[in-house]
Amino acid sequence: MISSVLYGFCQQYPEELLAWRTLLSQQRGKALVNLPLSALKEKTVNWWDGNRVFALLEVNEKGNELALFDIWSGGIVNTVLVKGMTGTIKDTNMTLSLHQAGEMKLLVMMENGRIYDIFMEVKNNQPVWSFIDLHDALDGIYESPDNKQYLFGMPEMFEGVDRYTRDPGIFDLTREEWDEVNDWSYIIEYGAGRVSHGRYVEDPEKRDMPGAGGAGAIMGSMVWGVNITEEGLSGKILRDEPTVDHDPAITEKFTLKKTQSPFKGIDGRWPFASVRPLNRQMLVHFPKDILRLMRNEIYARHGVKFRSDAEIQAYFDRQPWYKVANRPTALSGIEKLNVSLIKSLENNIKAMEDELSNFDL
Image (tube, rainbow, N blue to C red):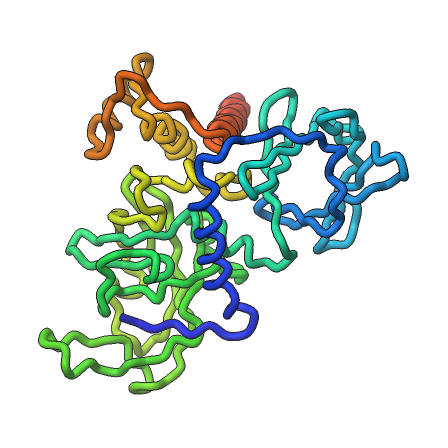
């Protein structure tokens, strides 16, 4: 197994991810309570929308006008006019409402009566939250067609991870410009500062482990391009140390099937959609057909039978965990929000496709 050493501000990320997953396990299934937006007086609370961190600041003494302030750019994005339980974003057809599930507070943005985005309360304005969103969306143990394991995430969150799992685990979106960026849902970079183990002579199979420069050498980061599939991921290694033995080889395309999730006890391919509030930025990486499966998988976990959609019913009939319930259980408040958000994005994608189809290309 490759060890991963993270430097500088990256060192806090594993702790933040573990703390976040612990919080999620404690809040899952808590009732969603509506709060009046006028009750939002805490000026130190920040809000994450998957792309930027915001604050809601009072503009006047009456408290009926708030500024949606972008922490990172230092500018006011919108003015929110507060009236009772909700607020209207000035000069738009959007509204904001405040909700709480256990210890988690959420801002829900609606457009024309439909959920457009969900902002999550965060305790700091570090870019760590983009890291957490990425790991929530992709983390798991994956298996290649030749039965090799690949670990995405932290080993502490999985069972049966052996020393030769072929991934350092912690990764982030690369900030570099790539010619192939349009070919992949994600271009991810990980393993900066990996320590080479050289050759494991005690390995009975005499496998060559990454060993650029010999044991103890510091290696550069690896870059993968990945796409999301029904079963897991497909992708290609775009960059790594040139003298390292690779499996798969550099430029070789590969497919991986997800076999284990960090969200223990929750069935399905995309269990995070039943655990945490999603945001629009997380979902833009998923194709429309995958979003449809993700949305319906939320219902499938509750034992719903899809009487009006034979294709979806056939898909879930093939899943070993799926069981139709005589009385399906109710969706949680967060699941209901996520279903509405996913459906909203599906509708937007379809509208764009319909518009493009009107052009003679």
